[in-house]
Length: 151
Image (spheres, one colour):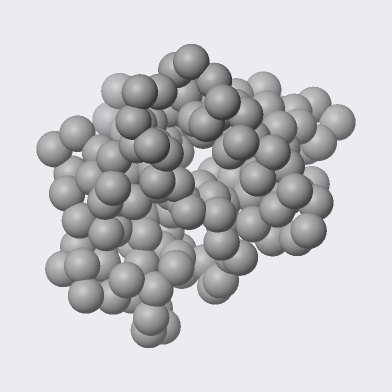
């Protein structure tokens, strides 16, 4: 199994989309990319922690590639929105790919360049590609939030 981390707005919808993909073994929502340990949802939503709402994706590379996850990531959200997605506004909703190793960095950067060169976007892409930090698992009521509510 391998791990990937993505931030793309509110983690509920992104988590659900990744969890439904063949080859994804598990998902969890949490916080990454800011300061402080064990942040709470309230601290992250304040915008002062610097953390982004993040989805941890555990996947079987024999069934789905990291490149496939990246392609889905680009389609799941609008990567041209700086610090917002839809009605969700703040740095915690930024677009980010948190890489865990050099291979992921290379693939993420190639994917980013392909997305820039593609015809899907009229505005500049603002997605960050940064090293993964500690993933702070969100409170239990956030885990599989939409699936628990049959959405």
